[in-house]
Image 1: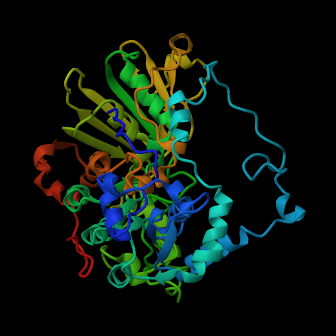
Image 2: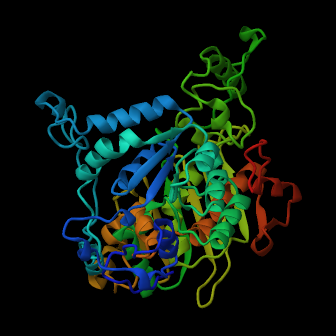
Length: 552
């Protein structure tokens, strides 16, 4: 799915006299404000009109929410909403401290390497690889980068800490924030998965543009709901699959469009998640009142002992945490530190496991490049599943029908350390351990790493002889996914991963989760959003919502 670039004025839009700031932003979102704009240089060198900046609220500040917030600090961050005051305080304090010059002692410990490479014993030997030629950054990316120049990150951070943080409004309940604060133009939603849809839907109802972390939502019904609402409300939307805006990912699309691989009928996608990231395949904390000595040391007995041990190590809800608001749309479950922060991803009530977490960064690329519709058959097999915590490892088999001029495709997903068979063309070189995509075509194969990185052809001779593909896919200026959204709201860029696309990708991912929960192969009628071979399995396409958090 290649994109066409909408012509843009080289001038940065600035509100003309007589038009309100909000009217301009709303108009810019549909790229219809050209008759009202004047060049920024009219204001004088170095001046930024207030109307150039969006007022953005961040809902969920830990993890990716903090990353998104930092990427948008060139704008006005006017509100932060999070159910955990302690996490907010730590995040804000960390940003303050980032402006304090580090001493030599604080900067040491990692050999001055910036905290990535090195440690005791030095860097590990690089894994064996093939002699793929590196073609460097694309000409299209270099040209795109000239269209918009970001301010240095530290300048944005300093401005945020010194000018915005003192005025920042804080909330625990997103409903109160949306009801009380009228100056918000756009909302970033980076909460646990189960609250994405309710918050984004409520924001769009008020005409707010939304950026929602991946997966876009918790259920198939929610994905379709959000996609429709985005169209109805005419707002600019983006899912947080940032790899979609990367030059490498778009070079991968150019390879697929070139036909160098021939007909592609088979795709394999894998990730090492959840290993070493969050726990799965574990029991819910539950006290055991029986005789522990009579429990067998089989799997069931060990799981029961674990549940009891978790229960004994539980704590009261921290005073800084609004657990009721964390639960939101999900069923009532007693608090336990096993769930929050971050570990929620491995629990069915709140997350979507490894497929929901990483599918948006990996399945994205074949769905995009091969123009895959909705699958007609989905079957997930897994290690033991207890119904509440996702299994340690799964494999999902998707079957996609033929498209115009393109054959049917079988796509297989692997997680938890499972991987596809290694292509013989790789010899002794191993598949990328973190994850990747393998396309199998009639004329060749292609590998990509997580986020679509490092597209490379197999055999290696094909890669080096073919060279870099013709550049047909437009590039995102500076590969800046969050700012692509902000600039698209202003009408100065083309949105990268809008809900119109992201909902489709998310539905494909979540159908794999539905098959796992149903414990059977699913035959799917995508046009009618209906599982046809197992009526009961349709319950896994939606959920029941707690009162006050319904999807409207």
